[in-house]
Length: 197
Image 1 (cartoon, rainbow, N blue to C red):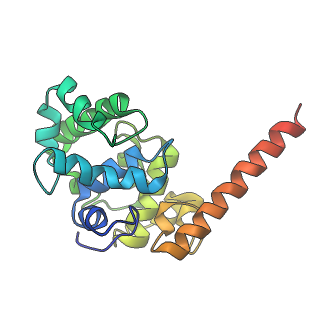
Image 2 (tube, rainbow, N blue to C red):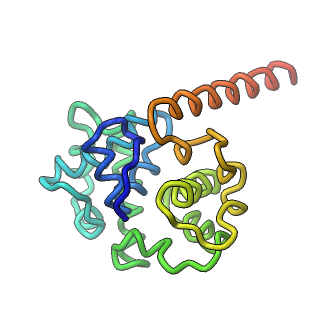
């Protein structure tokens, strides 16, 4: 895996996401309740604070929990909720160590079908169905991981040029389109809530 992603909108952070399967998974895990760029810059910040230029699942899983939470809490914090996200990242890494010998890429390597891949992603700590589908779409659209039926398994996120999620962001223009789509979805949800009262 060595591609150029544009999710953090920061060359160094994006380079790490493109070469490190674990960084991509951690970025996806962090992508909630904060701006997307902030979430996907997180893996590079964590790697830097751990004293390296990559992430290692074994190292993170074995890290003393309070010290790891403190590392994410340093200013600028890696996430709005650094303590709970530190715990989730460690749970993810512990799961990868137990089930995939710490190799994040093994989650999708040699998977025969999109359905199987979705199942594996949804089993990861912190990955619900929607997050798993978005990550599956990212793998298919930008990272060349395309098992049979991957688009169907990714649901609407797998549709070509749908601009629904991070899977469709390849630069500033597509970022604007995805943001616009998310705003429309929020407005529609708000309107239906208001209409139901």
